[in-house]
Amino acid sequence: MTRKRGKLSKGEMDYIRQNCFDLSLEEIADNIERTVETVRKFIDKENLKARNMTDDEYMLTHLRDRYYYAELGKQFSDGEIIFFEHQWIDYFKQFSEDVTHTEEMQILEVIRTEILINRGMEDRQEVMENITRLNQLIDDEMDKPTDMQDTQAIASFQTQLGALMASKSAYINEHEKLLTKKERLLKDLKGTREQRKRRSEDAKTNFSSWLRQLDDEEFRKREEESMEINRLAANKALEKLADYHTFEDGLVDQPFLNSDTVKDEE
Image (cartoon, rainbow, N blue to C red; front, side, top):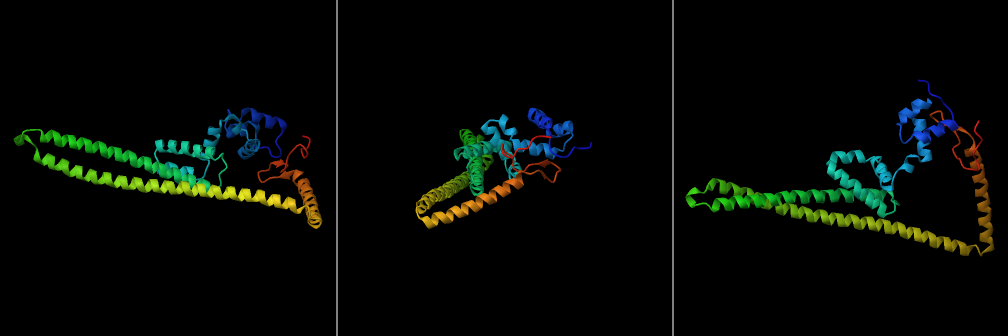
């Protein structure tokens, strides 16, 4: 099928807005004879998908689009993935979604550690159940008359019991190591955010200092000249960005669009 090129018409834009929640990108593209990439860019530009989602749904979609998400499916079970998703959303909501890349990687590692802690607790519980079962089997044999006791079975149960007790100790040690690791990761995450907060507060202090310097006439004149140069440069850049531009996919549009730069549809 031949695909139309150039700027989307008003009718095409309206069609995408009306159908983006019900039809796939491919179906919309076929129906208006446009490329899938053109449709996708318009949807992203208009932020259409986000308008029909709850905050949690939007963050979940964002998580599943992250480059590391596919690897999680190779590392964790389906139940662990669900736990990961809930924890990831809760951490991001706790930080009001104001998370840097470094902080995101720290959150990722915290949740991985939490999953390993949960996994270790589940394995330890299985060990405890097996210990209880073996103790009961040994007690049952020992309650029998001496000549009816299965000494080989008792010896086997005791050997298995010893291995399970050693395994129980190993799980306890591993659990303590993981808890220590989680505490360290959370401390590092807190420290990273506090440092960023201090830098933000320092910026506010610097702004106050700058305002005080404006009392000096020479400093004020230099700032006025600098601001005028920046204003002229910004206006020139705005004029350039407001003109129509042909993008790589053939879409013709204005790179910068607002109420002042919008041009009448032809």
